[in-house]
Image (cartoon, rainbow, N blue to C red; front, side, top):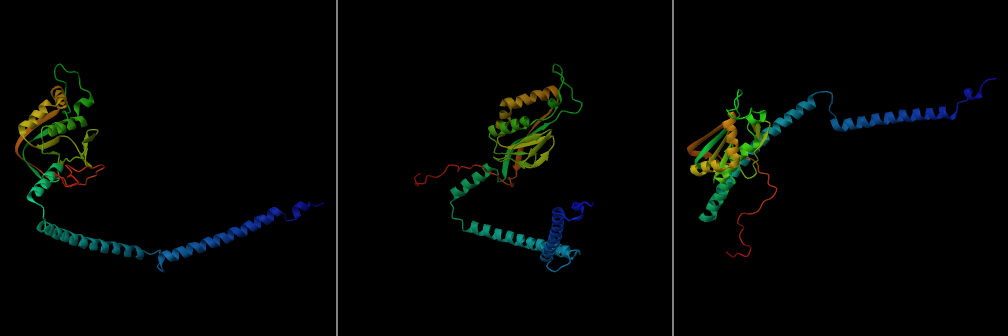
Length: 263
């Protein structure tokens, strides 16, 4: 007797055939969608050629040249605006003087006068401890962040009108940070020797360095392990104004005028 279960197509086979037909229809539908999308993207062009890429490159070059012309035009217009603003400026001499003082204090204007330069450097490779001092560890032979900060803070306390570290002018938002034995200042990286230049009364600046406990602590390592320390007085120092970006999180007007107009 034959097995009727094997000779008759059951519900499982019927479902399998229906699923196959549905999958085939889905594949054709997806292919149609891809074709339509490709047509809309290409807009009738051949996507397999480089013509579209060449056209895009030409467009970029054209826009770049146009942007250059606009930048030059904008610069000319800005100069004209500045000239007209200077001509029509109704501010008093006192107001102009106050604005200039604020710009110099903010570090955005060039500062010139007498001053000094402090140079700090790592110990030489063959450095040894001076008599009476313990053998140095690796950290004893390199400049640290606190050493640079100690000099900068002392110069500010000594009445510095402006300070420049390496080739960058410091402003209120500047941060002197070290990573390893390198200095990171306003997005740029520097290696020793580090030069810190200040404009101000030379005697006051030198006295402030002598009074700073943090600076004196560094000079103990200079004596013990040969770290670099040099102070050069200068008759004329010129510090350029800061020209980078300023990221302020909080700001408060300096000496705000009363709202009621009273003195």
